[in-house]
Length: 98
Image (cartoon, rainbow, N blue to C red; front, top):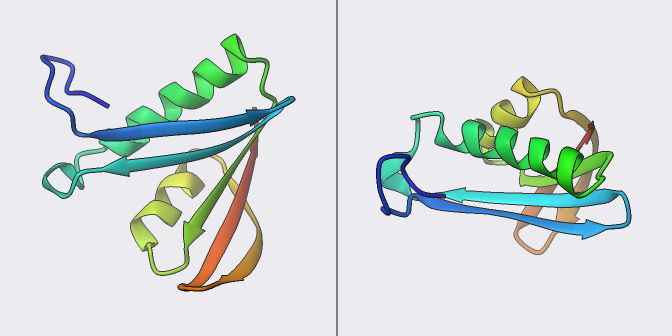
């Protein structure tokens, strides 16, 4: 992800596509937190996946301690489907039909 007015990187977006499903991930650098950049980037990514890659379902695995990220995916229509134990704690799995 880059700021719209230049070449300054502010984070990254990622999608692993398998058939009509995609697992998404995103990172926003700390200096740019709380500016809605993650939301803007994820909305863009989901639109791209649904219109250009024929993806119909997106999955996001989020660390249970990451309240901001959990709130973000919920705000754009993801639904929590399970909690999974990991080596670092727990991930919450969210799904969105596109």
